[in-house]
Image 1 (tube, rainbow, N blue to C red):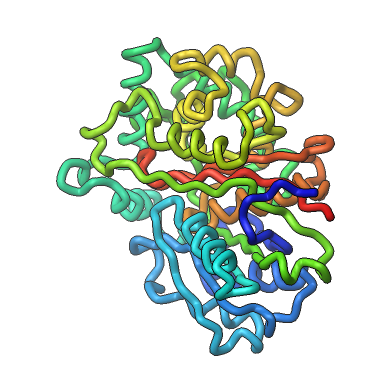
Image 2 (image 1 turned 60 degrees about the horizontal axis):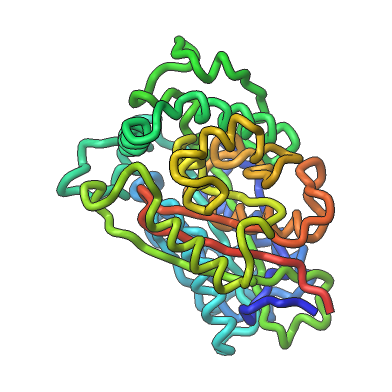
Length: 392
């Protein structure tokens, strides 16, 4: 019998390709992912009670009021309540957690969650400006997000030593993992020397971060169908939540220790306590590697390595496929792509596929317990889910 602590389960999912999808609009991406999730769940769209959409935008597209775009996926969705959720790069998880709350309460029996972003309509400078809206404007308005995470890397280096080799190894790992993900934006292997060395093809963006340390500007969408346990009997598959915890930290960088992820650490601790597990019980993790330094800091925040020891963990290959805890088997944001509003939902789709043996070349044998960590801003909005397959 399952030990799931949350009375809501994933019963279907959809996921578009991630990348520069010039033939797709925000609406077409939303509709495609939603239709796939409904079909995969083998339910009638009329049985969906409510819809949540995770979407950051911040000026990347003119569609500021887009929750009802989901209703275009099926005529039976017309007149269903639909709500857009925004929490920076964690907008997808914000939508998912809102749906979980509604389903657990009993007010909603079946929910549809979609995360989507259309980013490539702007040039890189335009996207950089849009994303900077997720920082603390009184102090950080002139900083890009690469510059913000460069501050984390610099603080870490000052306390524990230079992390750039470990960051490069993370990039190499995640690019290699993406080769097994047919939906990934960049399915191209890179070697350690290339990631370590600034060059015309790998320029310095915000020292010490180079292009290979930064996630991709991507289009894409992902979707989940969430159901109350009362309706699970007639469905083919279910993935339950042992924990779903959110912790928000202060917004200004100046108010935080940049050599550590304190908000994420607290979110992980709450999730482990809720699930009754330790980090050693996990079979895989999908984590928010918006920049390679973020994955390194996350390894320490989640307790996989002590503070300052994450670099050694990475050098030893403990987060590789087949290692102690495989991390970002999908390629992560680094190579799978990072369509902002879609990211949190995508992580949960990929975790659900792992836990039902449907992950193809990414599959971890006999995966029973997986973790998703989705983060908004500079370790500000932190969501940790611990998932397991549900069996009678």
